[in-house]
Image (cartoon, chains in turn orange, green):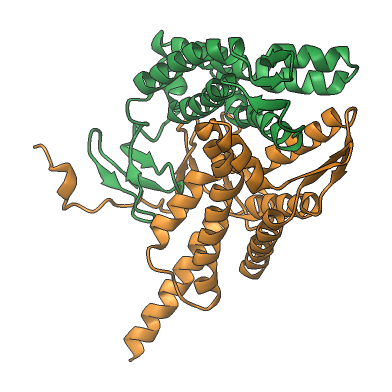
Length: 230
Length: 205
C-alpha cells in the first residue's frame, strides 16, 4: 500500500496515554521515551539519558507574556528611529541607525550582506514580535487567532535567526574599536536596543510551549461549551 | 532503552508532541500541523552537502578582504585575520581575542565538529554518544555568534565616512563569511542528533 502523501485520509493520532494517565514524550536529541511528570514553576524537565531539555514547567502567565511582547514592539520601533551610535571627528558628525547601516552596506554593492543584516536584526525579530502578539492578544480576549498552528510554527522557525543581541555586541566592539580615532557617542537607540534585547530574551525564556498550547486548549474548550449551550 | 522510533512514535520537531507514526508513513502533528518525521529527512546527505559547501566558502571568507579602505594615495584591505592582528597590535587584546574567537575559532569548530559527528554516525560508532550530543548542543548554541564580525564591519563602514577622498568599504570576504555562518547554522539544523543514539542503542540489543 502506498498512500498518496498529499491526501492522507488517516488522521495522525497522538501517542497513547499510559494507564496511570501519564503522557509520553521523546527526547529531541536522543529519542528516549520518557514519562511526563508534573513540574513546579520555572523548573525544567531534562532527559534522563542525555540531559537535553524535554519541556519546561509553567513560566510566565499570559498577561506577562503579552506585556513583554508589547514592550518589545515599542522598543523595536524606538530603536530603529534613533541613532545607535554617533561619530564626531574634525567637524564631521555621522549618525548610524540600524537602517542606515543596512542602506550604507547596500549602496556599497554588498546587497546580500545588507539583506542578511536587515533580516537578522530588524525584519525577523519584527515578524516574531508581531506574530507573538497576533497569537497572544486573541488568547487574552478569550479567543483563538485563525491559523494559530501555522503562525506558531513560523515563530519557532525564525527564532534562531533573530540575532539582535549579537548586533548589540557588535555595536560595543565597534565603539571600542573606533574610540581611538574619533569621538564616539552612544546614541539613544543603544539604550532602547539594550532594553529590547533584555525584554526579548526574558520573553523567549519565559515562553513555555506547553503553557501556550494549554492556553489554546482552554479557549477551545470554552468556545465549544459556548457553542453547545446555544 | 526504548526509543520513540522503535515504538512507532514520532516527536514533532516544532511543538514536541509525541504521535503515532508507523515506519515510513507520513503524517502531520495533531496539535500544530507540522509535518511529522521519525527522523529529519535526508539528514546525513543534506548535512554533508552543507558542510562541504561551508568548507569551500571558508576559503574565500578568510582570503578575501572583509574591509577595504582607500585613501588618495594608498589602499589597504583587511582580511578577518589581518583585522584581528591590527586590534592586537594596537593594544585592544580583548577585542582581538573576541573577534578571533567569533570569526576564526567558532566557524572552524563548527565545521570540524559537524564533520566528526557525520563521520561517527556513518561509521555507526557507539562510543561517547553523550559527549557527541553535548558537542552538537555546543555547535547549535555557538553558531550565531560568528555574525559578530559582519555587524562590526557594517557599523564601521557606516560610521567612518571620511569624505570623497577616502572611503572604507565592506569587502567581498564579508559575503563569503556571512554565507559560511548561514550555511553552518542550517547544517546544524539539518543534522538529526538522534542518529547518534540509533547506532548506540543497537549495541544494547
